[in-house]
Structures are given as C-alpha cells and as structure tokens.
Amino acid sequence: MLAHQGGWDEILLIVGPMVVVVMVLRLARRRVERAGDAREPFDRP
Image 1 (cartoon, rainbow, N blue to C red):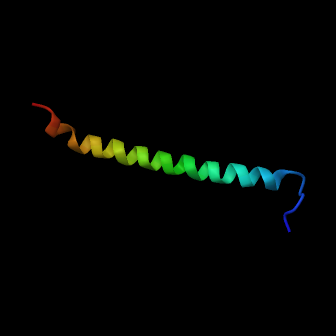
Image 2: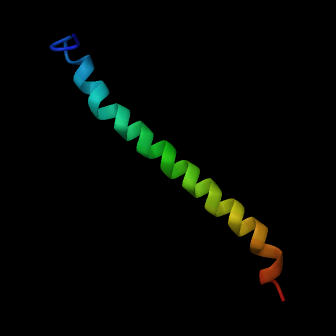
Image 3: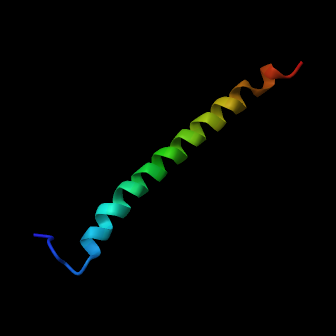
C-alpha cells in the first residue's frame, strides 16, 4: 500500500516516532517545572 512511494513514507516512519518522543519529553518537562513552582514557597526560609 505505502511501499515505494518516493521515499516520503520512509521519512514518516522515522520522523513520526521522533515527534512523539519530543512531545513526551516536553510534557514531562512542563510537569517537572510545575511541580517545582508548587514547591518553591516551601523551600524559602
């Protein structure tokens, strides 16, 4: 079905998972930053 479509399908097979990994890393970083912001007032003396 998608075999030998000029190379664009192979590009999607590589770029697709990379995009997913980047999105998961961004989500994780946001969660860590929010957790740090929530704890910040308690860290100050």
